[in-house]
Length: 179
Image (cartoon, rainbow, N blue to C red; front, side):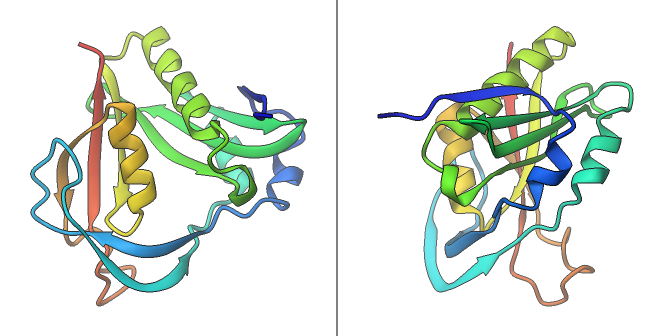
């Protein structure tokens, strides 16, 4: 039986429910340059490790109150399964500021449901498409964006170098254009 995913604007439960989620993922491969698009290209296996992006649910909800911003969450049987934070970027595209799916909810359609809502939100705002950034070590997410129809349109080898000296992570920029 497949799970029923519901997506809606966050409510008062979001901050408390966030603590019960595990948004980390296992890195087992990394994307390799050149990043010429439109798809990801070659990947190489690496020694496995766990990656966690720090997110503060209160900061997410605060940011969603800004003009041209939104925060939606996905739930399965009432349990928080994921979220997506959106805003209007400086270049006129909708920007996915953050998207995450709980480990237990992966491969249940949560990411697709969140992205479908992002597309609807961006179209309602009259924006020409969506852009997002992810890292070369998040191959699973990159493959999802590629399947969804995003195009790999650029990269930045130095974006994370001041945060983590010696990092091999490369920022990858993806676009989903409506026209």
